Length: 343
Image (cartoon, rainbow, N blue to C red; front, side, top):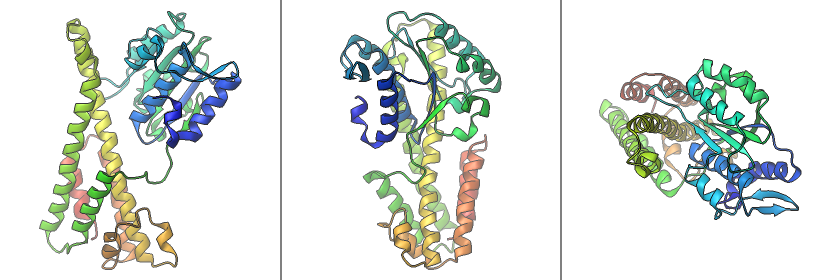
């Protein structure tokens, strides 16, 4: 994969490529978007392009990678000596000050085998305050031929002192993302169940069962995907201390990615409930304002609740997302949230 294979992010990619072409790269970037996996791909492609042995060029400047040279392959497999990744560790899913100090030492050294040193901070919103403060000087004045790339799906949680030192590139819109066939089918099934009469607790718990089963499938898929990419799979004979570290990193990555995808799933429900609210308003031309006009169930729900109730449902989903961003028990938070919905 190269930059040309990411048409959905054309605007952000074009900005990066213009900077590459003009030789005006920022020393630190903040990549924001809705999908952490996509942000990691973009950071990896930037590292490849900067260090590619046979890059695609515009004039004399490299603007994309070849994907086939030794440097590109090393970066893809995570074993390039000059490209460093920092991820949240431990069950608390934070980036600790020791991790930041380690990567700063690496960045201060001259490149070993490439032109640029690159450090990627995955989940920059998980920087512990002490780690963030230790990072500020390097972030403001990194050594020559080094690029720092911070990734987050929640820029609101990043310290202002970090934000002010980075050039932000957004790779995700503020509205609902386009749904795949499987997601659309699931949301349609949830809507059909919600559109049925909700006079008993049984109906509400059926909704919860649909949601919990989807979340279980999501977590299983996350565990399978990230475990396959973990160095634990590639280097089974590594030293125990290193394996222990990789296990901690994997557990933290799984939890972090699951929470992100859970928030994404609840975000879909939030946009669907917004459709319900728009239906209750009965405004002329409201069909063009709907996020998912192909889902008729939102109209069915709207016909039996008031606009005030529909608006209250949006507040419930926002409150639920807030609860889940803490250490609250997931099942309890979801149960309370679904019972509070006015359907």
